[in-house]
Length: 443
Ligand SMILES: Nc1nc2c(ncn2[C@@H]2O[C@H](COP(=O)(O)OP(=O)(O)OP(=O)(O)O)[C@@H](O)[C@H]2O)c(=O)[nH]1
Image 1: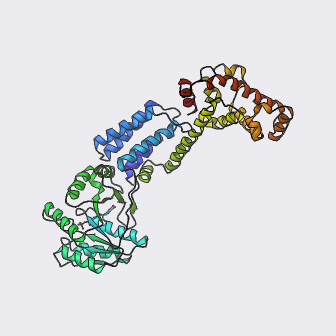
Image 2: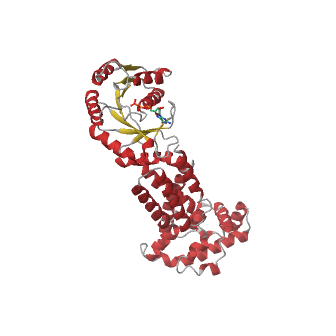
Image 3: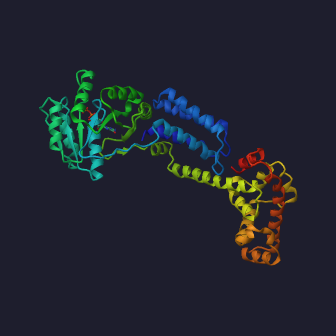
């Protein structure tokens, strides 16, 4: 898969391995490497600069969401920007009528005939009855090539190597295969003049009335793919594109990005000479493989989960700012602690609360864990009414949580001090600077 580009990008991403803070130097170095790799892959220089600018801006300015490491954050940005470069959402081929007619166009040698064999196998595997019509009158051997390619998979091919009229062949084929689910039309890839080739495509398109016109582009031509896509789409409306020969091609990245730039969706890619060297093009999957990361999905899911948890923390902030601060709120704060950093650090950021650590017991990670265990042994009533927790309840809670009475008392003391310090906040405007600050630190 785009061998060299993939290798160098995967190597580049490894540079991020030890990064614990967003290190500007490392980010710049990584961007330089990406630039170099993409330019070598013949990606248009303007696109490369646009991409590196967005990566740099986002990497240095966007705060990593809590719970996402700086390394994961940068990988995610690189990944998202690279996906944009090749088209974002996958556009699958939808076979929604019968017979579904697909017209294949593309220059000679682009891999058109081979790709027709590949697609017919792909559709057949999906349970669709597929047939092929060969209208290439310029290269009579194309018919034999198709027959040979599809022999072992039992797909019928219609053609008349002696007939010089492609429209006639197309119509006959259409009639012959009218009961099939899909009919694929192969066309000529050359003419005496390119102009005539495009005219022939136009005529065929009018006669066949295809449900989909697929342009096959040779991935080794790099960014020239853009011009080719334009030229064809001017004579025949091109529905989608298949980029071939991405195996081992140094310029595949250029071809893919150039095509994506025209807005025509890339539906499949060819990755070898054999019928099975063919895959549905999914920009996200493609880029994760290129960056050498199989687990990018889970990384994105993690970021989404954290975003959801942030919504919960907003609720907690609202509760506090409206003056409600029971053990329940404190518990939910503790539960979010893992995502927010140590309480001490959080508290130190709030003006007015900075005095708290001096007379409050330290809230270390370990203590927070213990406090959570203790609160798990409390009843709903106790969580909502901390003032009701006296002697016998303390004893029961300590026993239930496997802690000592002193631990429960320490937790209650911690709660009281915190509540006192928070009291002043409640009366202030929720949208005021204090509210905003609270929201920020809980984010
Ligand atoms: N490595 C590699 N080779 C491919 C791929 N697709 C096609 N080829 C090769 O490219 C060459 C040209 O492919 P064809 O399918 O004959 O090309 P065509 O576009 O049909 O050519 P015309 O019939 O002359 O228009 C053949 O040698 C194929 O084996 C691919 O994805 N990877």
